[in-house]
Structure formats: structure tokens, C-alpha cells
Image (cartoon, rainbow, N blue to C red; front, side, top):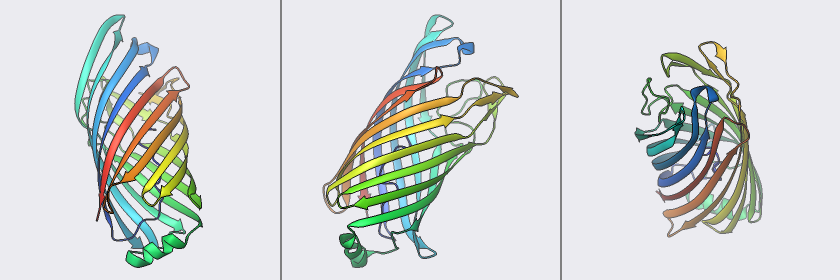
Length: 284
């Protein structure tokens, strides 16, 4: 859920603009595995270095954007394997994310002075958008290992979002369904299938002045039950998440963001995590 709990994903942006961002995130987590694996008390420390590029444009008289996200990760997992202390390290590229989003209502395609004048005149506004995010199987993956940075499958995430702004306040609501292809090279030559994963998250954003904003977020997800070699597992996921973010520009083209994301599983199998992040974005 952490990659989904991001505010301002449907914001009105000027067309024909480029956004390039870099980010660092530190994650500390506790992981609950299937008891059959005899892996207990697992703790994770993960460093993530990410880069993202977004290009805005106009399509069918609507504002649209396409983005690519790539991360490099280094992590250490430690715990008990069959009652004996054990640890493992992984470093490498994660899966690549590509996202296409289109505003269906509101946020007309504008740029330059027209965009600035339009934004200044909008005291009450509603934006509706749709998107498709695709997770590509490009990350580091070893089929003889249970713990990997990549997933060795495609994941398709159709999304629908609504933003209502009134004065300095904005309320965002996004629904997502994650659809997974099969991993035919899962651990020990097995085949992994997983049910859809349903996510709902919201963000309350306050704009102090142009470019300076803060947000509080909450999210819930459910599903993702596994089937391994035709045998259904009792591992359905259910998670709660929350986040705080603050954005601050240093000039018209460069801005910084700091944030915190927390997740807590509501099942025995899942992840409790705390992530702290810092990012910078340049616009041209």
C-alpha cells in the first residue's frame, strides 16, 4: 500500500510540462509469514532510492500525464528459521512502474498564463480522474529464493479518483484494484496465483500558500489470497495505513517533500511497517 498512499495524484497540472523527482525512503518492518514455512519473528530494514519522471499532455481535450518510476533497494531480513536465528540480504532493482492518468472532469488542459489565471480563479473545484498503473516484472528475482525484490509477474492497477477543493482545503479519494498475472516460477518451482487486491485511500490536503502544503492520509486494503499449485492458502491480506506529508518549494522549479507512512496488518500474515521519506522534484 505504501506506493499507493501518495497525495495530490490527481492535481491539476499545466500541459507540456516535465517533472523529474528523486527520493530516499527508509523502512523498518515486522513481517508475518505463513506458519507452514516455519519463519518467525522476521524484521526488515530497507533502504529505497527512487527516481520518477512525469510528462503532462492533452488528449481528447483532457489533461493527462504519463509517469515512470524506478527504484533501487537494499534490505536485510532477520528472524528465526525453524527456530534458529537467520538473516538474508538483498540489493538490486525493484519492479518498474508505469502510470497513465487522465482527468475526466474538471482540470482543463492549459499552460502558461492561462493555467496560472485559471488556478487563481478556482476557489471551489471538483476533479475526477482515471488511471492505469502497470508494474513490470523487471526487478531482481531468483526462483529458488522466497525473498525477492522483484515479483516476476505483471500487476495491473486501474484507479478512479475524486478531488474536491474548497479554498485552501482539498479532499481526495482514490479506489484501486490490483490484478495479478501468475508467477510460474515461484519458490521451489511452484506456480503462484493471487486474487485481486482492493484498496481505498483518502487524503486531506491544506495549502498554506502556492507550493507549500501539508496532508494527512488514511488507507485500507483487502484481498490477495494466494493459490499455490492449485491449492488455496488461508492468507488473505487486510491492512490499515496512514501517512503525513509536507511539501515546500525553494523556487519556481524545485520543491522538496518529507513524509511518513505507517501500515499495520489486520491478519496473522502481513506486514507492519514504518517508512520515512525525503524527495526532491524539478519542473520544466
